[in-house]
Image (tube, rainbow, N blue to C red):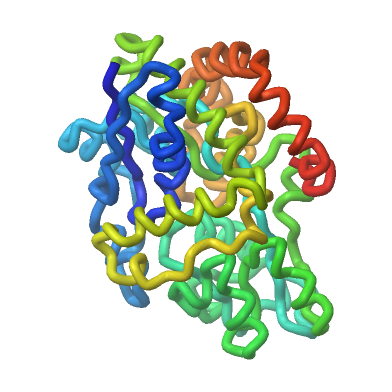
Length: 354
């Protein structure tokens, strides 16, 4: 059984879980042969990560490039994309399970900025234009009565908007607000910075499934057993990746291999992920996502004007197809390996809230 897994963005992190499963032998053990097709979906996104680059948008490119490159499963698609495609009459993409179920960070602002309204005239750090974070910012600013295009200054780039790097620019006074990964938030609060929004707390109990795993409707119908085996291996990988420090060296090795071969020079030069962010990774331990969580994000996008209000809960029920990942979880959860993993991770879940 063969499967081609690819990424819908451009950077290595978006196929790291697949690479871990491949290197650890999980796919082989579940009877599926996987090829990782890296950085071939929407290659223009590489340019959009740069200041003044084009606004990043997956709509109109993901389905096209899945066909062009023969990709069966994409692990990191913006939850908006299948629904926006549906509005355009391209009703082929289906969400088959979770990928990023949490935004593992908080919006942190400089001392003296205590509300979204206080951001008027201030500098907001964002990685690239038009991504998930951009749309969330724009939604929140409009709610506060601000115009995202005129009332704030955008500082675009990896150093300003990457959640694991943005705290440095904040601390240096180069930005006034940015989303920061949770492990780095306490040091800013100790310096008098403010937490305007905690994504994990605000998204309970449904999580924040910002990016999801998708496949084409016809492929799912023709290959249910292949999809199920993929999910059995992937769930094992999701659990494996959150177990640190035990599995940290292996993950570091896999990530280094991915970056060496990356077509984007900035990816090859980036620091590897620190151990502090690994146990709090956003992958769902059962491979699944919350339909209600999907709907809440879509409501934000409708309010922000980036998704047609014609999308309803009925559309969500049809597009989100989790029967196969649920079958996979029912089997994996009974294994001794999964039981050991969940027992090991229970204190982490209790501490982090997911």
